[in-house]
Image: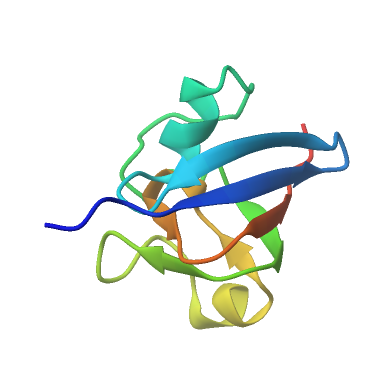
Length: 94
């Protein structure tokens, strides 16, 4: 098994920056870095962590997270079940 890649995650508008590995969710990486991020269920159903992906690419840990196709098309993501594939910028209000 190859080692996980590491990418940079930037939260807007705060400008907070942290690293996330490809083998962990964006939420888990943010919490590990002591960045305050909203969460509840941590399995993609409650939508507490919902935010917008401004740039970058992610992959979901589950087949269909709690987002509609329209929300996905608008760039909304659930960091609790999203892993980075590139550097990522999230618009994370709150």
